[in-house]
Image (cartoon, rainbow, N blue to C red; front, side, top):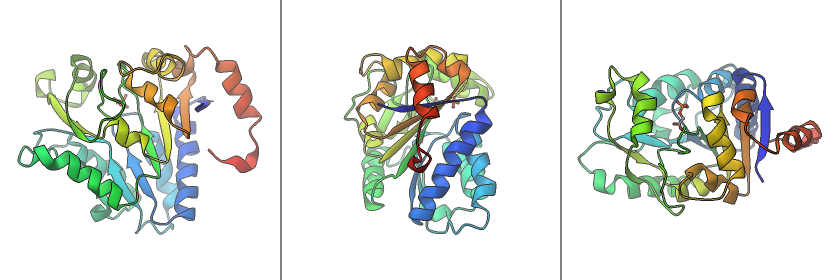
Length: 259
Ligand code: PGA
């Protein structure tokens, strides 16, 4: 089962996950990170910045989960821009080693399979950071997504477009389509780290971890993965039935074990 860690604050989650990433890079200087966008992973990237100062990250590679289709890559809310601004520049990564799915309309038919080939050529993703949508999506795999899905174009749900309208001037500016790693792509990452903060995520987190495994709740795919860490604040954890057990497990965890 997933290891569930309940933290007091987002900053604690950021520190916990950043420490694990630092250990990974120490072990494997050409580590392959799966990068998420949105508000959730920000504390991880912020915590990584001081921890990576002085660390050689020149060989670290990264693959973003998803991108909007048809949005100018130079738009500040394209995930290419977000990854550059929030990850590549502050952490000093080599821009040539960090990939984002190509959401430009020219070539979109082949962009998904090209991305799969690029991930495979890098040796697969070592640690995949994930947020979770209020509708239970991971990446932009909306409800109904196949557990075997690969990187491909998806249509965003009305809920996701409303959730993401805060990043745009108006909801009409939120793209309708995205290109996202599939649930099958995410499942191949060697370690999944799912983060969620706030009461608005509590139902999705509980359904993902303790509900039925179903394509209707794409994040429930994590139940099929052998190595999952879930880091949540008290509000996002509030609907979990096994909460006391998760707390006991974390409190009794041996120091040597890592995440
Ligand atoms: P958020 O989005 O981090 O902005 O809440 C999460 C997601 O949609 O995966």
